[in-house]
Figure (cartoon, rainbow, N blue to C red):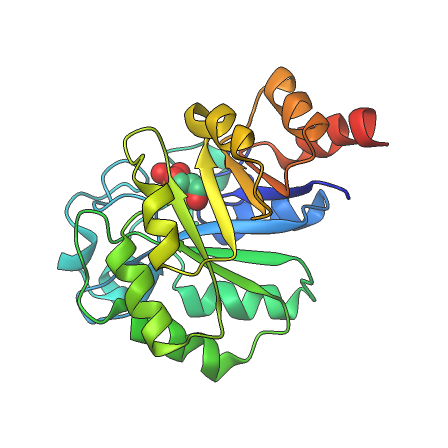
Length: 243
Ligand code: G3P
Ligand code: MG
């Protein structure tokens, strides 16, 4: 079994996270998958950005939920990373799904619903309906740190694939796993060793694995996937460790 390399927010280490150029770069280096984060705009469109505010990753300021999509897309989401990325926009989830389809993407897409601080009422239905309407050919895994979100997703579509997202601040994942039937565990690095000791058959995807030492460790342990900011480097290390 070969460990999959999933590009975290696209190729976050080499391009502005959660933008189309970051996803394109992830595809170009041959990533097996892409992870992205979703919030809701003021006019209830799922948009792809990591934080609750636009301050860190655009030239604007304020809460994502206080702007319509049209307003959000006026901001520059690339220049903060490097001048050559000026002009990148905050993409809608629809734009990313269509982009991946048009790129003949056949890897796995991990959609993380960022409902940890703002519940974004209705986001689960909106995301599932959008995906259903676009019928992507690639597999999708939904994850969230907010287990109420996972429960709502499961209620709406029990057939889709869900993963429990956790880190050291969220150690109750083991008991929760019994009540939420998930097909994957997305563990932070700090909980990795305790999870590896559990030896269950749930596919393990580890975030955020960036250094050669940690990548090698995960490849030797043959975890299902590493979620990394540096997919090109991770693929190189994988070749050295797993052949
Ligand atoms: O989904 C894995 C990872 O992205 C979770 O943390 O904060 O980078 O979204 P974060
Ligand atoms: Mg994420």
